[in-house]
Image 1 (cartoon, rainbow, N blue to C red):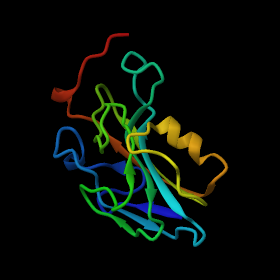
Image 2 (image 1 turned 180 degrees about the vertical axis):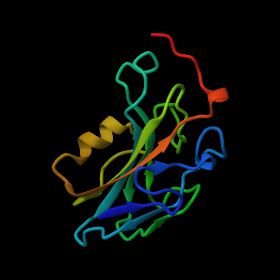
Image 3 (image 1 turned 135 degrees about the vertical axis):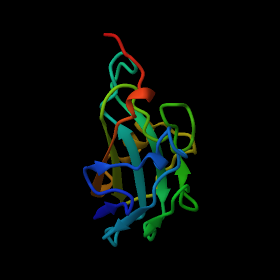
Length: 160
């Protein structure tokens, strides 16, 4: 199973359009070789490079989407797949929140999970609830990592 973006390569830079400096919309994503036995997919985008002074857990959840139809081949730019449920991101929204690092270069992990079940969760479930519900049901995974760093004149000074 793979997750691909035509906007950036694995380990490459995410274009500004998809960040807080740009239009702040999700890039188009292609889902490849999803296991035939999958009943649903989960997509989680998070940033593990958040300074501890910003978030004690050093993780910012940018996008949480559950119950994606496993027949989905493309997640269009600026959209959530039909029938899927948006979870709660770290900003408190049920939507995509683009990269917006306050300090230096950050890594953004787009993690795709194939599940052998459909999750019994409401829209707005936080990532921890989604991850707990996935336990014992993951039959495939894929990761796409993108990088982003704000221009120097847009950075926030963080004192430690």
